[in-house]
Length: 407
Image (cartoon, rainbow, N blue to C red; front, side, top):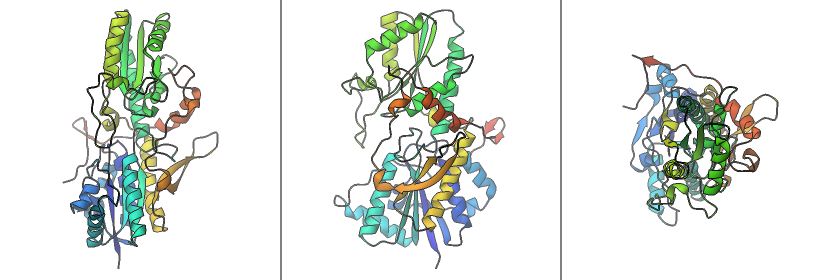
C-alpha cells in the first residue's frame, strides 16, 4: 500500500521558501512510493487541527509549480508554534501522531528556521521513543542565515540582494544634496548580523555606501559611533549607515529596546524595532545635521521582484534532495549546504543530525568583521557575493508580478 507525505512551512516567510516547497512537491509527485501529497495549513497547526490540503491535482499542472517557485511568502501559510516538551503535554504529541496515522502519512517535511527545527527534533524523538513509523526531515529557511550546520540558508541570498540594492538606491537619493546628512538603515537580524553585513555588497567602483556597518556580534558603544561619524565627515558629506536591529551595548542591552517599551514574544525573544530611530535622534542632537532613519522591515523578506537566481535554484534543489534523502531512510536530520573548496563557487547538499542544529544560532565569524566593529572584511564579501548572482525572469500581468495563492 502506497504511503502519503506531508509538507509544511513555519516561521517568518521568505522569497525562496516556496521554491523549496516546489522542490519537495515536485519530487514527491514523481515518486512511485507516494500516493497523496498533503500540505499542512499554517505549519504544525495544520496537523493539530487536521487542516490538510491535498496538493496532487494543483501541482500536476507544471505552470502552477513554476509559478510557486517565484511566489514570495509561505504558500501553505505559516505559524509560530513552539512545541512543549513531551512530559509537559504528551496529549499534543498523541494528537499529532493520531492525525498522521489517520491520513496514512509516513513522510514529514518541515521547512523553516530555528524554532521549526526544534519541532523537527521533538517530533523525531517522539517517533523514535514510541516506535512510530515516521520519517522526519527538516529543510532550512531563514533570511537571518543563522541556522547551525549549513553554509547558508535558502532565502538569505535574495534578502541580501534586496538589502544591497536598497542601500545603493538610498545612497543615490542622499547624494543629491550638498549638505551634511546621515541616513541610518535598520536591517533585520536579532543576534546575527548576516543580513546587515550584506549591505556591503552595494559597494562598487562609483558607490561607496554603506560607510559604516554595525552588527550584533560586536558591542555597540555610542561614543565610538559618534567618533566614526566625525571621521567619515572629514571626507564625505552624505553618510549611509547600516545597522542590525539587534545591535546591543557591552552590557547586552539592545539599542532598540533601550527605552524599555518592548516586551518579549512567546519564545522569550525580545521584540525589537527602533534601533535606527533611536540613533537618528542621537545623531540629530549630537551633530545638528539632517538625519533620517529607514527601516526596511518586511520588505527584506517579501520583495520578490529582484530575486537571486542562485538562491531560487539552490532552494528548489535542496527541497528535491530532502525527498531523496527521506526515501533512503534518513530521518531526524536537516538538509544542509556545504561549500566546496575551490576557486569557483560550488555547493553540495547533504544532511546533519537535527539534535546538533536545533536551538543553536550561527553568528558571523570574527574574521568577517573588522577590528573596530564598524564594517565587514573582504572574507565576508567573498563568502556572500556568489550567493546573490543572477536574476529570475518574473511573470507579470498588467505590469504587476503574478503570484499563486492557495484557494
